Length: 249
Ligand SMILES: NC(=O)c1ccc[n+]([C@@H]2O[C@H](COP(=O)([O-])OP(=O)(O)OC[C@H]3O[C@@H](n4cnc5c(N)ncnc54)[C@H](OP(=O)(O)O)[C@@H]3O)[C@@H](O)[C@H]2O)c1
Image (cartoon, rainbow, N blue to C red; front, side, top):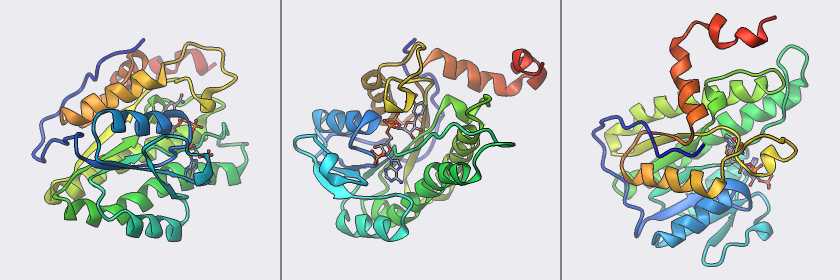
């Protein structure tokens, strides 16, 4: 299931050096965010701001804990003021509420966009000047195979993650001038709370984070962490009648 990063696009910004970096991880209290925090410290980051809505739930020794709700602009501004030395921003926090678009709960659909899209955008806007002051640095946005694939029962999440992918491509262009590397990480089902209750094959979150950090350090602009994700991206070029053949009735 697990694959090395598969896509490397040439680009002009500097490559992110993890050793000695100052990183900030959103949603660091559990799941992939906790793995990012641990592995960045293991790789020699000088400081890792481990942020969470409830900072009492962060349990990674050596991390610097900050309160942060990415949907609250005041909270994001306070984090940017408290962490003026950040050179690597890991936009990991996200939610999945499993709504269909036609009949689902509109408030939950909005929450997914508020978190995955607008929360990530708040972070990018607040930290762009911080990264510029560090010479450019890097941003890693945690996307999904669902950025490229719809599925009944999770279509609201697919919308939010597709929008976050477009955001990633767009801000990469907007921040190229200040030398900021913007990398997207996409993966299919991974063994965290988000996928609890799904009895399907899942990636090991530690391996996904390892691949993401390897890709980031190698200057890759996209890291596709498993074969299903590689196939989903390749299928963007295919006829939807074929891609969704089993679901169209
Ligand atoms: N697991 C998968 O299969 C999978 C697949 C593809 C992509 N992803 C993506 O991977 C990322 C991490 O997810 P995960 O699998 O680690 O899920 P998780 O275990 O459910 O963790 C989600 C994290 O996001 C935080 N969060 C949610 N809303 C937030 C907000 N408004 N402000 C700050 N933090 C917030 C949560 O904090 P609380 O504890 O306060 O709720 C939690 O720390 C997400 O972007 C997700 O979409 C996951």
